[in-house]
Length: 78
Image (cartoon, rainbow, N blue to C red; front, side):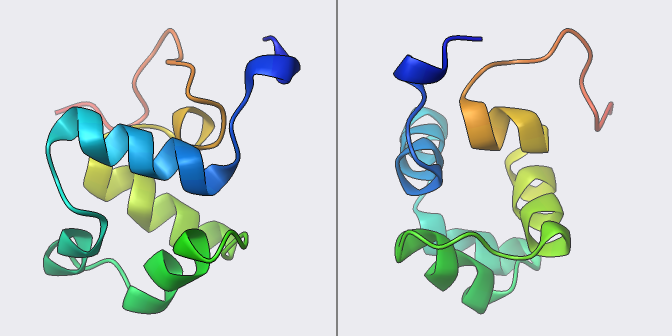
């Protein structure tokens, strides 16, 4: 993993949402707490359970949310 190329959580989150064609706050419709999204959009790190909910709603792992790198195995298989 190249840590020099890592974006901050806010930038990773926005990039992933853009790639998936969704607006960040639309995740509230998937049950994600609005305060978790607010925290990310302010550039803060939300609690681990909030990161889990965001990653699950985006169908990615927490690792991918934080680093932008896809793991070898999906954490939430269909």
